[in-house]
Length: 146
Image 1 (tube, rainbow, N blue to C red):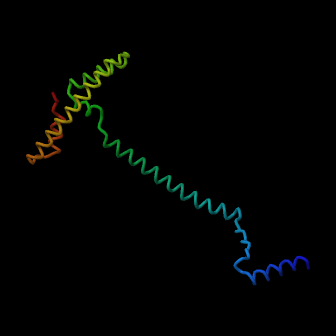
Image 2 (image 1 turned 180 degrees about the vertical axis):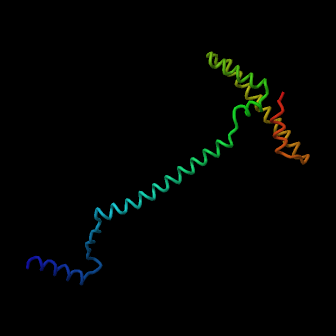
């Protein structure tokens, strides 16, 4: 009887002042089974995304490897003098002569910059003359720069 009186008072209070009376929210029913079911769906989605990301990464690496040019191709584009400067710089760096290495590195950068400027000039001339850019690039790469 004592417990029912409390409930009756709460009901009367709710009927008289519905806005000011706080109702207790029922706790949501969350069982172990429902949580494992939810996490299994989530893990499947994550695994699928990881697999897709991995496949894309592998494909990107394959494409990059196909497009990469070998060291022989890179060396072919540089003149003999530039390659000799690079070799001397490596030898000076290995010997611990950093001052000489720094000077040689500066000369290497200058010669490579000149090569890029010459290549841009040749391509600009070819574009103005209406020649094939692809053939011009190939001819420039095959010709030893002086």
